[in-house]
Length: 193
Image (cartoon, rainbow, N blue to C red):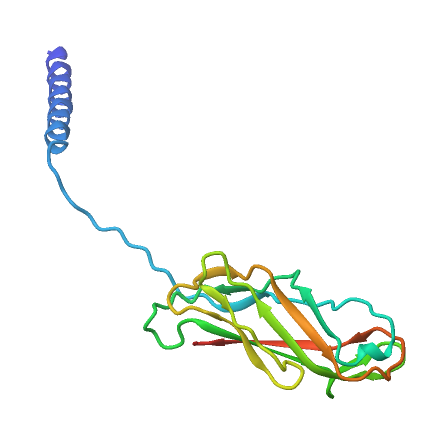
């Protein structure tokens, strides 16, 4: 008699396992659909890198007045736009301006505080490789802020980098001290084109 409950329990367990296997086999033959989702939140618009310009070294001479010294741009403009805005959204794309200042017109001397007056500081940045960050030729940056690049609406997304370009300085006076002259370049990144 003791064997009967054990045999009955074993039979029930095997029947349950068999029915589970049969159910699993049947269920694998059905097709179904489910949902998947992911939410992406807006990031930011930032400079990663802005260009510096080195116009070289020149001997003092009367020919310095009117010198127009062009140099290649060796450090590119890099912008991150992770706002995720489509082309028609308000603020899509971006504009970059630059202004070369030292508080007065011209560049200031490091050792003697003299002023090297300029009649023009210009820049023409190259475009990004995919053409969505576009360099805009700009002059008179020593007198006012001007647009030097813009990111195309809806396509200049993620990290964009200009490639190459040129910058030039026109010197207005040669009556200056021998010195290294510097100025600050103020860059501004504004949403919208």
